[in-house]
Image (cartoon, rainbow, N blue to C red):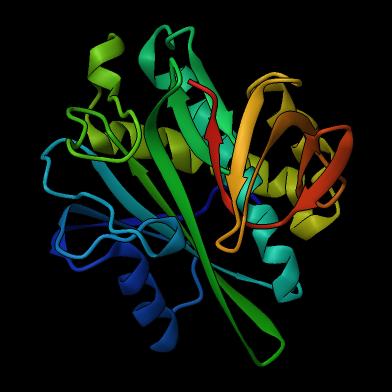
Length: 245
């Protein structure tokens, strides 16, 4: 898939993901980026709100229509994470040395969260509608979170959100093409591992029903997290991961 996506910029919206889904319901097939200067009801993973009050940060969502089964949509989390990582490498001159990915798609700088990605999807008429939401702390980071946060401006250059989104759109087009609706996921997985926290790093995962601690053992051929917990490697397709501080 080449980068032929359009970008539409709005002053304010409840959620760029919600707006992208409304466009899909109205017949829009994409690829289309919805970007907003502010969100009034931004969302993150696991039902969290995403702070969207700081001017100069990036709030954007990509609407895609794909011919893949819905279970494969979660691979887009790793595709998007690699694309955002590469876009920041290109936009910051140079990228901060602590830039890395945390499973499945958090953007970290020095162990602190600088951004996240939310994948939402639905199926109709044998097509998959996928929305890739990207939130990046560029000019400021929110306070009062349950985990350390940072922003790009604290680590050097502070590019304009549209400049960053242009880079992301270009990188996303490349990595969606590599992914090839799942056929090239092995290359995406390898790229993600090269940009992630190292193997053996202590971490824990909260699945909602239990919290398991162990060490990072990579991701499997489908993109699921592998966690070595007391000598037994367990596989997770969802959960909230925390790295040891």
